[in-house]
Length: 293
Image (cartoon, rainbow, N blue to C red; front, side, top):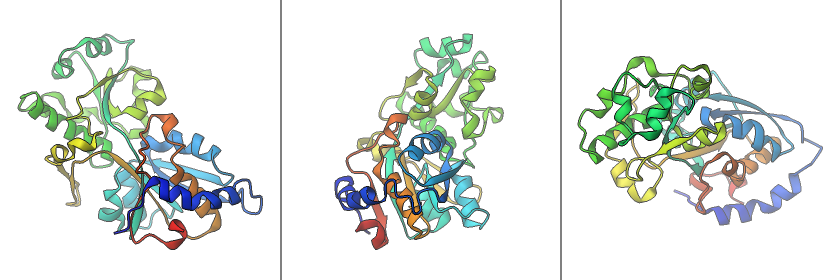
């Protein structure tokens, strides 16, 4: 299994990025990019500004996106997902790159009474167990944010010694598409939502932070995170772990290669609240020579 550090990969790619940036021969060729919902703004705005290649970005929940590709219903040149394990479990790719991390938070709307209750609550989950706060989350069958919400609540139940916490907090009517979740604040549909830190930062909403033992963003607690799991509707078992984002390039077109080099750089993610560690990009699997050299 090939693994390379961020420093080594960027050093290898440096001359290629410099040579292709601004190249008019293929600079405006369209490259179809399918991304996780939480990557939509970063890809459409900042990633696009980092390359001369024209990107056609579609955003879906990562589980749904992986299935669309696996079933031949989408044929994007680049896929970027909120859980790299889906490349192997659903898309069956030979390799992928890990490009960023994130953590879970509880965002709230400070302009609603329910949001104010979440802001001041001790413990943070107290108001979520009653009827005074409307909560939003995503569908765990469609995207990692949904099953990571379940992981957070499972970990919190153990951390705070609150058995049955998830059952007390969750109900079937709370789920929204990932790309629309925080927009529910603006309509008044929800007072609080389990989201990635990057999503709250992009929308400029305040949020409650969880302890590192719970928020799925600290590799030092990886073993604890792995005590949680979720089974997708097709029987695929997903085990908890530190949140990571991955990407894969699906063709050898020069425009795709240029766009993917921008993806690997990671500098399109940090401004949106993602964590880009020194270890990224981490290349995993049978990586094509055109990526590593």
